Image (cartoon, rainbow, N blue to C red):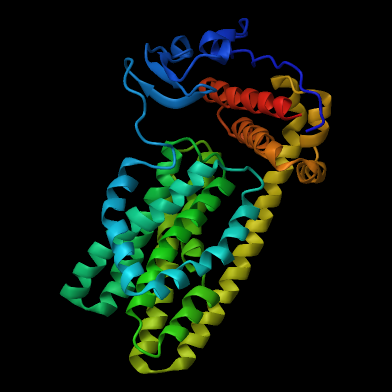
Length: 404
């Protein structure tokens, strides 16, 4: 990035006292990764320790110094446990029916660019996106297979498809979004929608592989066209209701689960309506039912696309409107404000950068977008969260300066 980078100053604490430079990081920000006394202990009234990853303070805290986190950020204990069961299944499919695995990856090429476009408003960490996809493919997928199979045996395939599957699968995917909330990755409606999309994509890929592997002779092409080409956005669309509800709750300063009372039923209901129409068409042999259902799905898709585009634009305007405030509070250089204060300028500036510099640029963009969401949230700014995000912005600016 060609803009000069000035040395930023940390935002003043709410009480107005002098900034505590130690909050930048232990050893002036150059210490190796490890547990250190929480620099916000006096603010929070606790003597906990906080994990410094070598570059910035993280959300990991303990009551006393403990061990280094053992898993990379793209993994979690639930995903790791589910992988133990998922990987052998994929290995078997790859050996017994490799075409089902290959065809199951096709929706990625269709859905991924759309989610990446949505993610431009507030670029999410690559590790967080990978974790969301893995959650949908492993945790949600494994739970769905187990419970739906039990219901299928006990009550029949129709009940499993229309009742059990929508409930179990949407609950499993909702848990994946809430796990990202737990990791402080969801700050806005757009975040909720984006993570809903990634989790839904992971689940759809694994489910499609299973359907393709079990398709009767002569039915593989039709199954592939319906699931991979005509409705690749089905699971992301169903789960988008949940992500929307969680994001709105967070933006309003409410607990993230407070929106589930309306978001989750809409996700389950739309999922059940889709599965029910397919089951009815299969039972009656009326192909027209599938046509009507597909038309309804197309209408839903375009309605959701318009709504998401409007939401994306709203968050763009928020970042642009708050850019002067953020620049003044967090010590951004005027040249940086010119870049991040105007959306079109920011997009053009990123395209002109070499690939090696784009990650730091995206990190700056993400930190500013999250700080904008924090300042736009009712109830005042959480000082601990503000300092954590400011540390991320400081680190990204250093990376951008080094890339010049």
